[in-house]
Image (cartoon, rainbow, N blue to C red; front, side, top):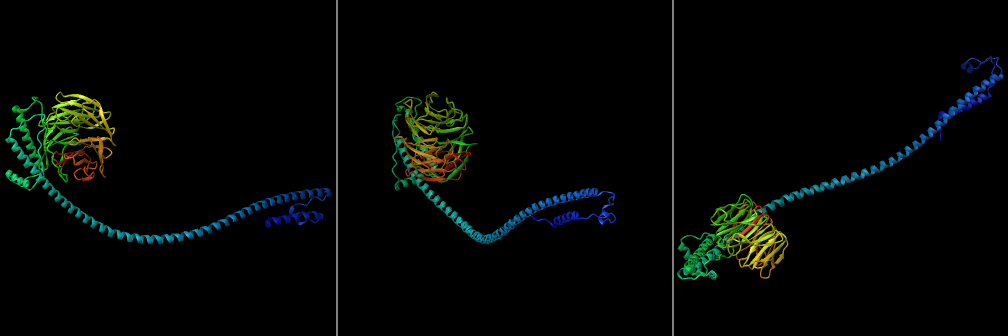
Length: 576
């Protein structure tokens, strides 16, 4: 450690003063020194040398004390200076490290500046590339718009070609129908001229239908000239055929009244003759009607294909005439106690059976606005009501997990079947009752056996069942977005139909066979109508347009010429 110049000078003065004090000779009292003069009055000469010596010793002790104090202060100053030197060295070390850090940061800053300059160069290059791509995109969008316009033109031309092809096919179908009409008229004329014995146990004679030839087409043209009116549409053909069937039925009734029947039962009825033509694929919507005030749940055709019934959540049933490719409102049936979930015409077309949410099924006679009978007995919503072969018997299914058989003559339940799960739909055969349930099972019941005879499991809740006219195949729709065809001769699943875009929209979505069992038809949740070909097992076509919400039910007329679909948005659409 090193001291300052002030400390050295103090030490030197202190040592010098001590040295002078020791060697100082006694001074005469007559010659006072300058220091003495400055210090004060001279000591008394009468004092003895011992007193003076003692006095000087005291003064010397004081001076030494002062020197000691000054030396102590020098030591303290020296220690303070040493700590300051240490702090200075520490600060100089920190300053050196900070200088080094500054140098390092300066180098980093220079490197980052170089990186920023490189990034800016790359950004400029990317911007130039982006501008080039943007210009190219503009050109591509222009080309895309041009291609879209060309595509729309091609689609329009394709639609026109398809429309022309469909019209040509319809014309060919109409000519075939005219041939059938002429043949039926010829057979009826022959039947009028001869005597016929009728028995209830015998089926009406079948009319052979050989393929049309040129001679028959000439007969058709002559027949059209005889009527002196143009053939308007397939629906008109259906009406004419229906009138022919009514004539034949009248003949049968006349013979029965003449006493040629072997049975005298007053309520006996002959089975209706359902005219089933070749099914024509629907291609376009011919008529769109707002059928109800709210969701439309059910739709069905009568056996003569000219009368249509729709039922909705507004508790109403409306009857429509299918005339000239249009739906014309005919009658409104009132008295349903709840939302209508299912409709079916009796085979003769004289009665209509409806299932409702008021825990009952109701029976109407066509032409009367009020309900004729009410089938009460279920404890929950009735989801399905179907006739058996005649109007004297019916079957209902309910959410109370039961299926009931009814005797309509007595308006009473003849049997209750425990379905173990919610029943969503039922169909009937000769002695067979088939029910579809919420537990993903289809159950088979025999009217002569008091228990379930078979169960077929499927994937998804069963929403509907449809049995073919020959009672050999069953079509089921389920919530796994699939339709399944079951062969009733061996009771196994024969085909499964699916399609991209098809989705079962609700627990009561209905699917049906075409009358000739060539196609399966169902409506999708997105408003599309899907048609599968049973022979090829592939999707035949899908139709969009009128429906914007889920389609609840579809119906295909027995003549095969029209399809009607109803949806959750109040609409009924006639397709042909």
